[in-house]
Image 1 (cartoon, one colour):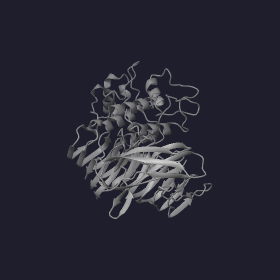
Image 2: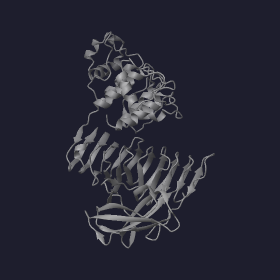
Image 3: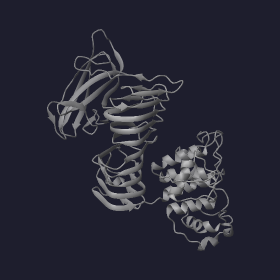
Image 4: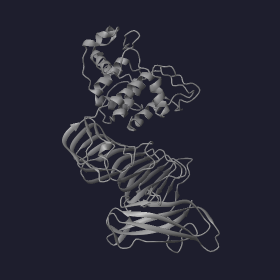
Length: 537
């Protein structure tokens, strides 16, 4: 199962459990249940939660509003339409979900005026939804095989048959009934969603580097791992479902003059570039791995909603050089916003001590900060709503609103750059080898750093050695792009760029002079400058 599945599975957990407590508690009431294997599989992976008493309640029921929310998130439906149901109030959580479901065309109200959001979804209603979304062939002839076929509503018969024939929603073997008017249970909903995900088909699977697709419309497209680090180009392509990207390299997946409903990024090594050009628009982007989001000569709306999922690989880096309408951050993955305008940034979750880098060319118009986090860099935050303690900024936002009971954020300017004469934070004397002149693509230099304590200091514990690289642009040196240099330690492990720095030695205890080495491979031609400094953790 692809990690893309996690997003809607977690929504299943949030919707079906008022208080999300994992189902590892007092009782596993799904043991011995016919759906035990599927439920247990989801529980073991952390995809679903249960009730406070530890139960899952597999025979519990699902409302129509709950189910359409799950479907909308599974298939990435985001477009809305006007609705006028008397029982769907604009203030209810499901109002927009109902709008999306009608715009997608897979469900209707039970009458022109009534949607019945809080009614339990019946099995025949679920069959209609499944058949419409999957585009299953409608055939009412074999519905008679169910012992209770006379109880199936006329409007649902052909869809029930289609869903049953596709083995998505089947009957009961003990009495050959379908029980169309019964509410679908929580267990049945889990199994149905699992089957829908496993049977989702891609109209196009791309396996070859250098593939160019032009002037086509697809529902679902998959750029597979077989593409490796190669290039793929989509020109004037309309994808109404999802584009899953598991292959492609740092030179890019290029999307020109195209419309993408949902883009899912899940590249194992995190080395991927998505470049938007021309009139391209991407409604929803879900990030589960490292990636560079970029735009060039863009006339379309570009990236609309971008979600950095909480399950994104924390060893990777997300780099943004693009405009984004809504960016939601729920993760521990490193985030560098180098350039672009972010209209709305929402920080929902980050570990203690986590930081986000804002480059000088980045502007965040509105930031809602619900988690302790540090912002580094000289980028601009126009408005910040502070809803958590422990927030810090290197550059103060132009305007801040701090919620009642929350402490004022601290403004922490960057430490001055170190040099051969001493470190900016720790009392350490530094000397290092500097690259000289132009470095060409593929050149590798060994950088040696010598550390010794200043007079009067006998030892220093828990210090970190940091590299800061700059590249000459015109007459000035500016922070490098993360792709300009590859840094590796003495064991050939890559050291990743975090907020423009490379941590080449961590947790060091210094009692006498020591040496640290790292290799720098230059991926782009240019003149580079290195500064090394030591910080006390």
